[in-house]
Length: 332
Image (cartoon, rainbow, N blue to C red; front, side, top):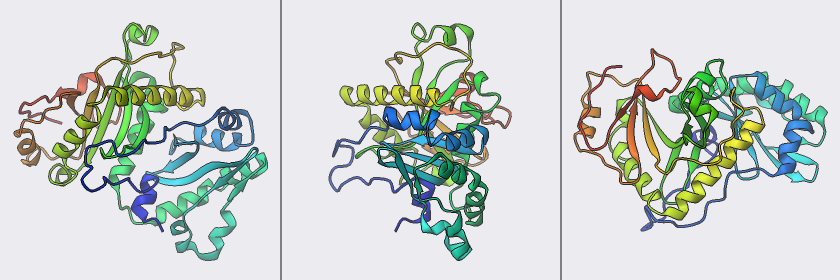
């Protein structure tokens, strides 16, 4: 049975195999859905669910390998996958049922074969939210992660930020997990009108909630090293970029981005950025500076630290500090 932290992230992270840390131990299945699935979301039996996601900014739809997850407050609410040519299953973990007993089961739609069933599922969203709200808030990082997705992808200010988030909790094989992956596509007229002349930059993002998460196991330096190893192999990077571009196009087609420009992105810049987002960092604490004094470097990406933009979650190019083997201090 999955733990609650695994439910929050949409599944258990894939651990490195002993002796295989930083090596390509297996081929990860690409995150994409087929045309039939996409058609059912846009104009078929899943339309009520798609409309619910578009209308409710507290929900976040993410594409996985031939299935979708829908999140609320960083917790996975729906897990929808095809089970036949015209039907879908929806798995809800029993952790969400336990606090409410047998009455909760009456709100669960496990099989979707008609638009009416999908509409009932969308209608029950308010009940699903209660189940997630009931749990102790175990992972604030996931909740802030979804806030960042909302502000940069589909809030009313999204078209004016410089980033779009493509995916969250991207699992690799042997290189850890990326909190978020997005593109830097500056909200400047020329960049938005001519994206194939001013190529957007693929950006891997790491979120750290509180200063205690900055060091030790799964701290900043470990993430820098694993990500750099992931980006070492050119064919893997090429496949990664292609996967992200396809996912971006699919989510754009599904109406999951607020983008005024009609221009299509056909390619990405050769270089990749690595953006660290520090949530509630306290300037008077020394842990961040101690880590940066170790002069972290990445051969295959440029490291940036994101600074708060007057307490918002919109990401802007001007609010980055380059961190390439140098000591930094900054005010938030």
